[in-house]
Length: 263
Image (cartoon, rainbow, N blue to C red):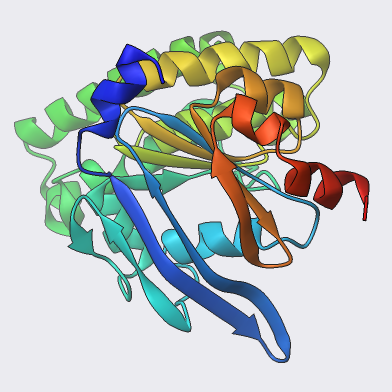
């Protein structure tokens, strides 16, 4: 273990998933899955299709309630909290299928992400006092900073649906960052990206981590995953199959069997 990982390992986990189970009808999507995410790390969740990865994300972010078990974020139990409440606490996510407001501009999409951090409210929008205008100006400035960060400041006034697919992926990340998260979950962020975009994504995720954001990602691109992750959780048929460093996972016979179908 590196000195950096040893130092992070001494801190309380930012996220702790405790024996979480979830079934849909007769299908057991997750069964007693537990893991911890240390602050300041990149933690990947991998596994074959149907392993329960997106279901796990949906439980962590409040979209689904677990049937059993709990989720502890920043040392507080968050099971049962609504999605917007978890965003306010500092949990943000992106989606497997890009979810943008297609008829809104690139800049407007990022501005929407800041809504949870604004103080204006309905009355402020009507009165439009100096502090409201100041807040709007600050929101636009921060949104442009985020667009520059992901490389999209040059297309801020373009309609988001007109962007190439890879750029839409980066826009979704910028919008998630606009909520000012401490924990960012990314569901297959490299899906649909070309080799150049995937390389840029890896650099971007490292830069986000340097900004103090802890990352959890579901990803099928093993080159990207192994290159940037501190720890990896492997799910198989809804159960935790293995967990460890990239080197440990690459050498794990059970993981190799799950992916390659060996006996």
